[in-house]
Image: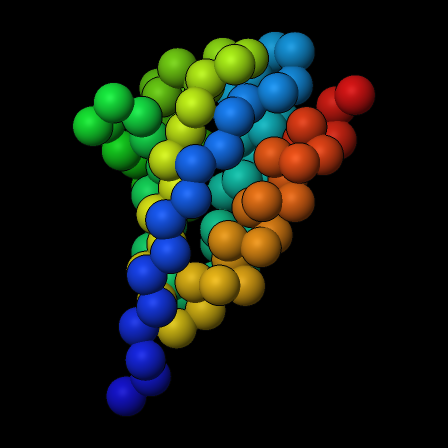
Length: 93
């Protein structure tokens, strides 16, 4: 059985319009490539990063601090790609 890694990181939403449809779709596309479970949320409310509708409900406005929790054998790789999205402001600026 593969080792289950658990990684938790916090990211700040820096792009001007926050987590709207396009950034949510990018997150879902990346999350879907991995077998690990990925949850994104804030203030105790979490949604699956594989659910575009869920991501649109997390109030990910510019400046929001979101917690990303990945659990699974490929959690480290998934978190690296998600971190790149946030660092690059979802390629919007």
